[in-house]
Length: 157
Image (cartoon, rainbow, N blue to C red; front, side):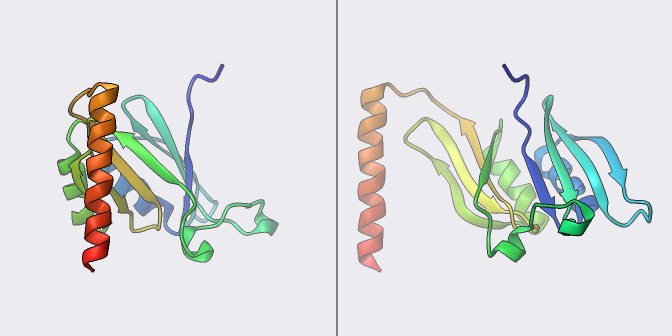
């Protein structure tokens, strides 16, 4: 059994990314290892309520790298969702530091206050604040209403 699931994001400016994630999510800086020249981040950690996110700069195949930044991929294929106490405040801090809103924070059918943003490094984040615990029937009805409204908006375009 694993003690912790640790996402690892690869970016174009590791030091700036560690700062962004620390400031936006209110985390602390963990271990930081720079390359010999002090220019690229080999390994960085942001600790969020005891949970780690690893951050590093991109390295070429010949340097032992195998991961690519979202800009080279034309986007990211994952979203990291963080459970937070104040989704609106997290979104405000992210946007004030250069993130782009993909979905405004709103009350959702599952009992969360949820939104999405893309950080300045190309990674997508979901922020989810628990605001209620609907029953299965309440959640099902709220989901139907949510998707009905979504479809109505699409047809109004």
